Length: 312
Image (cartoon, rainbow, N blue to C red; front, side, top):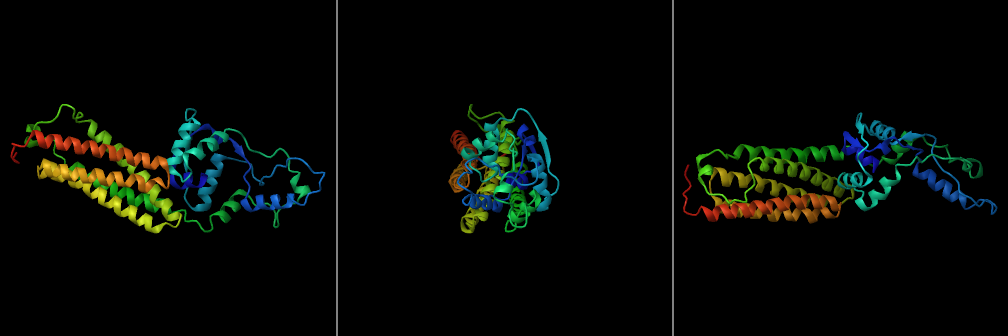
């Protein structure tokens, strides 16, 4: 969880538990102590604390991971209002950790996790080669990990999404004589609502799609990742095409058909992302819902303006 948060968020607003202290331990050393416990004398019947040599805050662990992975300094601002429930949802969107797992995990992080005793060093003995410090353990753990995968994926997806948004903005002409003259349903949202809705949906789609692709590739599911990329490219193309057909070609019926294809394409993205995180499917589902609404709006405008020729 810490790895993905650090790789994917160069700046983050975090809850107060980032200041909690922890004594992280390398996974291989946990195995060493568990195996050694099998050979303890029968009279040793008690709990034993196991820990690495470094006592750190989670904020320091984030910065340490960033240094080892070559990601650069992370900006972290701690706030007192981010509850474990809210934090777990954010973790579920950005990382492969499911929200159902993240919630109890995040809830436990409000407590310090520091060893109260280190008798295990006398009873079992330290690992061969001694205890590894946090950054040494991280370096070992990410030997076969690509810390730059998210940066490349998010950069490509964001660029494609931004290009779609820019094209849509440039092609939209809500001040044309034709658009002002056509009849619109009373339930059409006010003009200011469209840029707010689309900007939010574009941002959410970029994050959810990037996380889906990155996690599929990380799991070795390259074919599914390529299929998702293709589906996303088709979706963004249809998105920009609707604006061109409606505002420039002034063809409401054709625009309705394009919007319907866009809605179907958007609805297809959500289940494709579900295997990597439920919250990502929810975000993409919201995008599909808005596209479905846009289809209904296009259809209503087409029906109300059948006699109107395509002229300014």
